[in-house]
Length: 262
Image 1 (tube, rainbow, N blue to C red):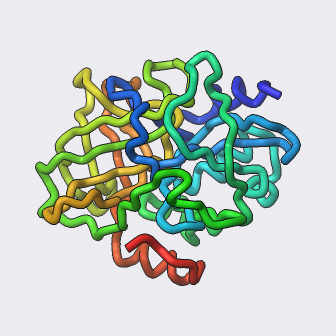
Image 2 (image 1 turned 90 degrees about the vertical axis):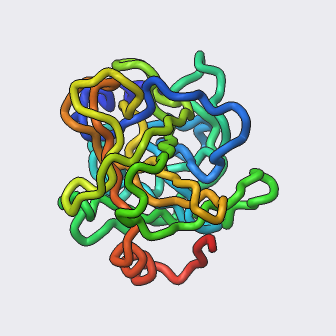
């Protein structure tokens, strides 16, 4: 059952990234950020954490497109069948001894991949769950999507995902890191951290993870999807996010008519 882990770790480095030098989440915060896990069959109790995502509506999870394409290769599953083997885990970090294995709660029914997944701003996939998430049961406080803009540069961005906390470690730790938003560019999107400088940042296990900002009204808002890090070891790299944009909203609304958090 655990043979997929080795192949996943040896895959192309861009597959997934997580948080190094951050804060392990054990207090129920950022429940909107979820783990993507792979289960070979519904009868299997545990799933293997391999990517992250963000709940943007009661039945919708936004993640990175390469969590579908490269995930299918890593787990040796036809890409068209892979979404039906993805399950979602909602909650804090579990016992580190069990990583990357968790007991997921919700099954993915289907996936909508952006029509241009190979371009930086198109590395997006929308997962539709089989049922609505009970926000009260899972104690989820929604973080509505808000358009990213250059007025946000210099403000603190919080990145959350289920990844490794040390370079070449094990995936599955839900952690966060807060750093100033350094730039918003047309190519690489939102950027935090610096290349070649040791410090907190992303590592394997967190592709598709969340970027949050505290808005001026005091509400936490979801502003980006983690897509990659600069080509350096974990803890010495910049992290990049696809910013929430009007084009992203148009694509989501063209794919589904399900409600989003407001």
